Amino acid sequence: CSALNLSRWSGCHRNEEMASSKWLDAHYDPVANLYTFSSCIALSDLHGDGENKLVAGDLGTGVCNMKLKVYHGTGLLSESTLLDLPTGMVSFLMDLHEPRTPAIAVASGPFIYVYKNLRPYFKFTLPSLEVNPLEQDVWSQAKEDMIDPMTLKEMLEGLRDKAEIPLSVRSLRFLMLEPQEMEDFVLLHKEQPIRRQTVITCIGTLKKNMADEDAVSCLVIGTENGDVYILDPEAFTILYKMSLPSTPNLMDVTGQFDVEFRITVACRNGNIYILRRDSPKPKYCIELSSHPVGLVRMGKNVVVGCSHETLHGYTQKGKKLWTAYLPAPVTTMALMDLPTRGFQAVLVGLANCEVHMYRDKNLVSTIKTPDVVTSICFGRYGREDGTLIMTTKGGGLIVKILKRTAVFEDRDSAPGPPIAQSIRLNVPKKTKLYVDQTLRERENAVAMHRAFQMDLSRLRLAAARAYVKALESSLTPMSASLTEPLKMNAVVQGLGPSFKLTLNIQNTAACRPVMNLAISFLYDENLYSMRTAFFKIPLLVPGLNYPIDTFVECLSDKGISDIIKVFVLREGKSAPLLTAHINMPVSEGLALN
Image (tube, rainbow, N blue to C red; front, side, top):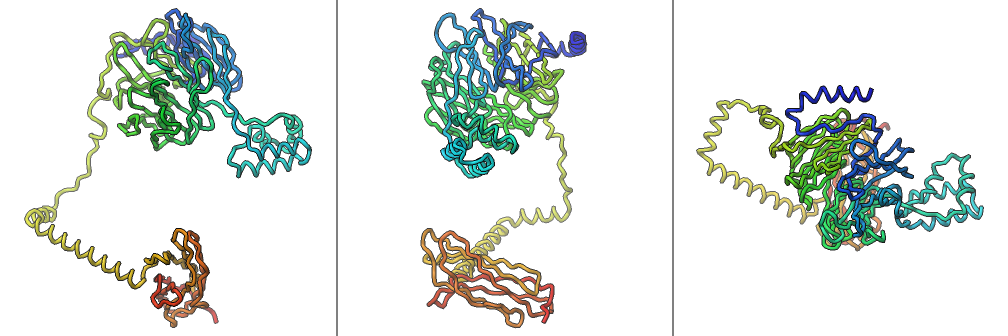
């Protein structure tokens, strides 16, 4: 059935697209049973014979059947079982020994498994993180049977909410258990020391001291706790450590470790950070409008695919260059590099079973696929330089070869003018009044401008005079005094006839308290009555908000309202420090005698 489906799919599309397509359909296996992402696929000359093999970290079911698969041509060459789910895989040269055969590094959990000649060679473990001392103390009490499991759970929950250092995996698993399972868990783990271990989220390679293609490379890894490590290629020791504000999930590395390098990292907080050799902290930050799902470096620019069906181009300093809108969500991205032709483009896999090729913001080619593409890899496969390898959501494997006669134009492949050009603007018709007004403005332009400038100057003068008068008479809700810098606002609550009046007073000084203040109210006694119309204010500490409440009773049944004036006074001074005018609402009821 699979062979029949393959022949039907190939036959239907070959005759229609052969003339216009720039690709040759080399191989398609819809039941290859290969489930992977672009971060877990690479092309490498594993045996040093000049023929590149396809190396893929198969995710299996996500729980079991994780394997490291090697393809040669159209067949599976070998496969090795992986102990955990792979999060990334790279091919790199770790020494200068002959023959120059690269090693494969597979990131899985807190470990990096290094394979040389397709055999396990070395296992690197991330350094342990600091354990919360309070958590250690709690588990020590549980070890000595000083507390029961329920008390242990309550204490750990308190630590989880307040502690700066996160809890270990053991404590987090314990908090997820049912009450009947807790005692057995404590008996099983209380004798073991507590360890807090992070995991690897992304991996890349960085040339050590030369930019040659066959130069020795260092491993660059990003971890769950926001750290980036650069490892020595031979001893696998940590050469350099950098920190990020969030967890990295996509990474691109360029340069040489001994000279200068840039690490572009997309993090889970929706930002992209650029790390350089001379700083352990990010040098530049790019804030995106949506979360990044793909990251590719193209020359000196960075191309980012976002979850809102957009593609953005940025400089290496974070300046936005362009934006392209996509017809479907992005599933994966990869770089298409043809050094022999001097051609570079970005391959973008979409959820509508298409792969778009972008050169800057121009769409130069479109490839239709029988299923949604989950990973893309372009490079030398076997002895063919321009080979495009894709895996699909259903586990299929697609291999295409770029025709030697293929030519890509720099302009957008979409025919005709831009879409925005075809949208008509709703321009209103010119009326006689509009034409007469236009003629009047042309004839009297100088006089109109002078009149406008005169009115504007008068308005500014009136505003300045009113402001100075308000400051001199303390009619503003903010004090202009340097010795008593105060701020006040009022809130009226209630429908009537009883209202609750809340005054919020704040001392805006840096470190000097204010004391010996009082509040007085001025109002129409025929309309309102107040329980307390004068009272003293306690000492005002800088930075704190002091709410002061009082109640106002409306005495009128005519549906009218008035202004209540509030004065903040200083003992020994006749002029108020602050004045506020409160526009009282209309009472919707009458007080019952």
